[in-house]
Image 1 (tube, helix red, strand yellow):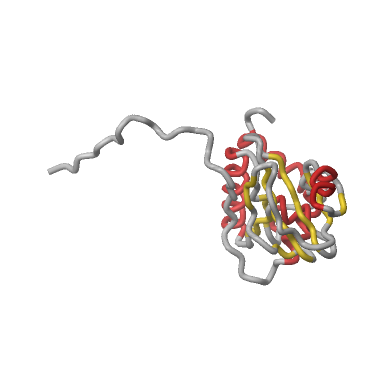
Image 2 (cartoon, one colour):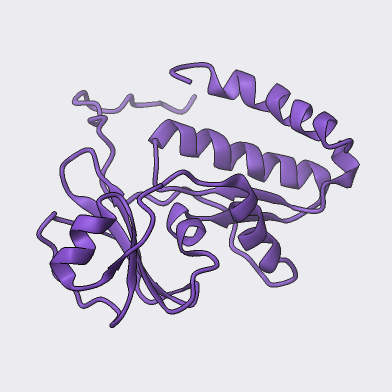
Length: 186
């Protein structure tokens, strides 16, 4: 959707519950994708997830797109997501666990990468060939079922509040005017 996500998300969740024959009291936890992705979409999604979790008295569990794309893969995995500014966002995993923090890199990035790893995500075939790794799927669609399974595996363990991950600065520029001064009543 180009616009109107915030207005559509609540009714969409009601529809999903109805299709599954469930109601809000059946919800045991709220899973949310924390990015990387669109700044506004991430803020809307994580804000709604945290609000729902608080209102329902259930945990909110954040899962990154990197984690969802690496989930269920054995051995080393490198996940790559395209970045609009020309670089790539990537993170390495071993057996589903992160080996490094997600990072933003130029297209000619250097490893090291896990030996024998499978490369998945944007341009997986090209990157795998460049670094002598195996190429996996280039599909970067975040499957809600996979995201839910990753979140469900974390139930019962302390989780930080879901928050969007950003690997680059926002496109919006801060205001160039000085901030408004508020005077206390004397």
